Image 1 (cartoon, rainbow, N blue to C red):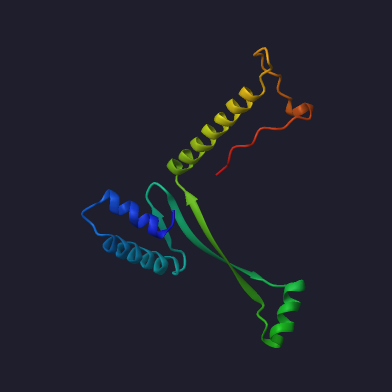
Image 2 (cartoon, rainbow, N blue to C red):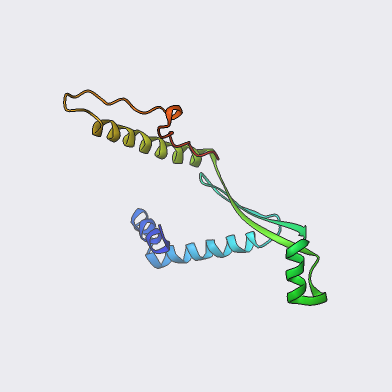
Length: 143
């Protein structure tokens, strides 16, 4: 869902608000979140979805990285670098919702596969065992 779609859906659910007003609220919210996440150690928590976190890691450069920096900057090459991570940590509710979709999708795929693998007399074919070289089941996401 993109920005315009979000505005349209919110306007449908809240008909007393004009699309322009909804767009303005979203823009203000985005500005607030950007300002907050630009500060060291701050997070933005979205209820029922999760937490946005920006983490900064300082590390000493060495080896090939340091050689490249010296080639580019000479004696001004930094000895330490910063690595910036932007992470999203989902809530348990969001995780369960996503897993439910994947589980339902897997069940539907399994049912379709079984219906396609029936013989002419209506008897199902036997499924290959993963240990015997058959396809293994897709693992569930681990968050």
